[in-house]
Length: 582
Ligand SMILES: Nc1ncnc2c1ncn2[C@@H]1O[C@H](COP(=O)(O)OP(=O)(O)OP(=O)(O)O)[C@@H](O)[C@H]1O
Ligand SMILES: [Mg+2]
Image (cartoon, rainbow, N blue to C red; front, side, top):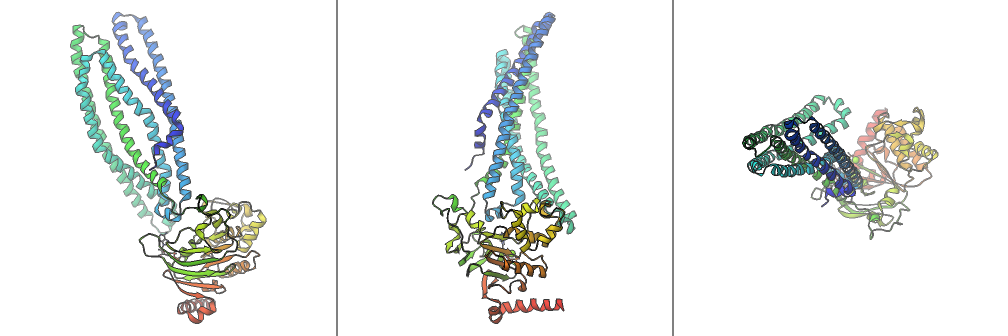
């Protein structure tokens, strides 16, 4: 169990300083009513203006010192809270980087963003507030009680009734308010999630004319949040006057009893004023404590959500980080890939997506994977760089289980083009250098030329230095795909995986890419997933996947001769193409 409070540890000095400064402020605050009493009893009563002035100056001085204490407290608590928030954020960020695809499947992106931003801020506020208020309120409360007893123990007996009544009132408010405030927190999450989803997909929303639907969805969540917040506010709105009523009744009782004492000469009028001043401070500090508790309960929701991420076990452990794991020097040299009875499902109790897959890809071979959508092609290739681990069977590269390689050495030699192409903000060259951070322009040009990207890159305003806006929106789908291929080639990997990498590229260009790859002076084992049979005909091996099983494996000629499924696909596709070109 990770305790969020441990993030305050490095800032312990500030955590200690804040309440000390606050104690100074409270102490100065507590002195004020006393001086007020002096002014009334000794200055005004005797008409001694000099006395009044000096006392006023002293009060000003006290207020100034109190202010310094207040500023010091805010400074110290801010330093502690900001440091605390920054550390949590970087730990969260670092943790998320260790997540495997399975972990990421469990936490949707908008939720992770909310946790990294809102939840951390919420906690930060709780820290600032509690360092200031949680000390101030009890100190002020106890100090004021002591002062009232000092002024008049008999008058202070009013507190014996007023205090318990107030505390009961606060408990009732909290009892009703707590669950409501928790609800408010989860409704804020919901609004955030919808907002993030919508903003991430705003183009799709427009294209699908889902504007009204999305607006409705947002409005419903937004109004739901408002209603819950109002309900919670109403509790406070009815509770506060009730507490004020108790305070006022207590004041009346004090005035009444105190008035009699003043008449008897047992109490000075200034002391009575000071007493009432302290009484109000007591009541206010209790209310402050109540507010704090509520803030705490909201903070706890955020803390739980942050802890969930921090405690998530990355389900793929890098043997490189494991002392008794693989040796660091285990490296891929040839690029032979062997699947041995591999069975995989996304959830532990779910239907397997891949069933008993076995095949061998020799170094330098091109293996094509063909199969209808949802048959498990992407899943199969994702197992090679260990984006997921299979439940049964194993995958060997150069005769060694992939789980034995350090993730760095494993993924360094695997170039991957994922099904959905993705580019980052930065220049084209920056994006290509993802594959090899030290690469020079020459190497980038070589990779881009093979991927048939060089020509269109040269047509962009600044060539390889052209800045891609985020998401690569200023490129066409096929151009993005080709940059993704070039990025993978930059690695000069031993194993190259092209998952539907040319689906948005025309057939002539696709053919050029394939020919260039074959001419490339770097040999790698290549996996090609494609929809078009024409893209895979030349492969050394074609694997036909059907609902997670291998339904055929062989060269184009072998399959065409013997595999009915392949014959079907061939007939339907080639037939179409012939028609197209006719
Ligand atoms: N992250 C995931 N979590 C749970 N199930 C998944 C996940 N990804 C894919 N699946 C399921 O696994 C099955 C195989 O998916 P996969 O993406 O491997 O198919 P594919 O052959 O690549 O299809 P396509 O040609 O459409 O890309 C599908 O039924 C899909 O619903
Ligand atoms: Mg796929």
